[in-house]
Length: 163
Image (tube, rainbow, N blue to C red; front, side):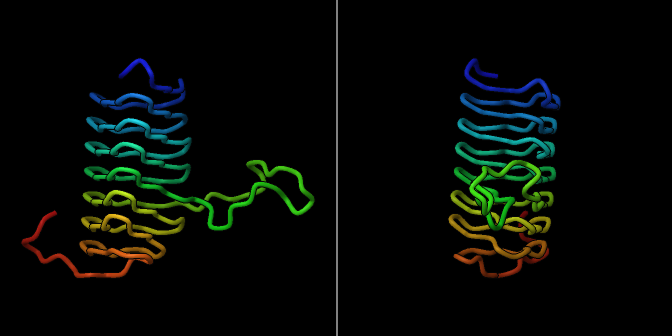
C-alpha cells in the first residue's frame, strides 16, 4: 500500500491485495489478490470479491456487492440512491436515517467498461459485459453484452466465447 492512501481501521483486506495511491476505503471488505487503482473510493458496507481489478477514479458506494474475478474500468460510478437530496423539505440537512440504500449486485466474471454508471437496484449477471459509458438502469442477464444510455442488449455471448 502506498503512503497516500486512507484505509480506515474497519476495512477488511484479503491476502495480497494491492492498493495504489490516493485510495479511500472505509468499512468495506476487499477479497484476496484484488487490485485497487489510484483515486478509488470504496464506502462502508461494500464488498469486493477475490481477484477483482478496480481501475482508477472509480466510486463504489455503500450497498454494492462485487463478486470474484470482476473487472471495473476507469471512472465507473455506482449510485445507491435514485432520488438524492441534500436536505429535507423543511431545509434541514439529510442524515443517514433520511434515506435507504438501494443495493447493487455485480456477479462473478463481469466486465464493466470505463465511464459506466450503474444505478441502484440492478443485478449484473455472471459473465456479462457492460460497454464503456453505458448507463445501466435495469438488471443485465448473465453473459449478455449491453451498451448505451440507457444500456441496451447488444447480444448474448455464446457458450465458447469468453468470459
